[in-house]
Image (cartoon, rainbow, N blue to C red; front, side, top):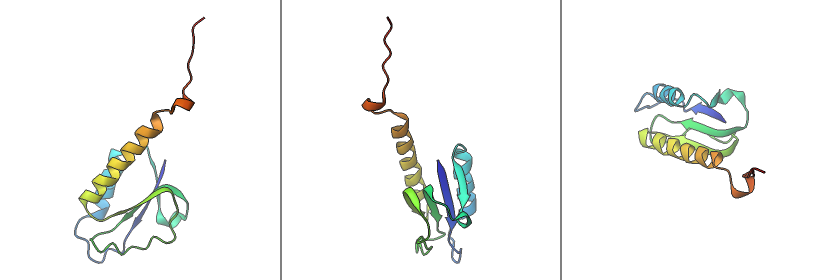
Length: 104
């Protein structure tokens, strides 16, 4: 899974955005991460804002699944929870995808 990361301009940050993103990456090393300059479509985009104004532009970002706008610890926790749920759903095969083996 590819997660794109875009930061706001940082004019009025109320927390250390880079430190929080580093923590997320350390806790989720299996994802591939790219910056906003890559101009690629990603499964998810993290738009990391430093305050509740959330003024970062998202118009040129293409997310195949979802674009998350993050501005505080609670928004990071909601995103992390949603990613975990989506990964569990991905790992649990649907009835149609299950293969049943019979011993003869």
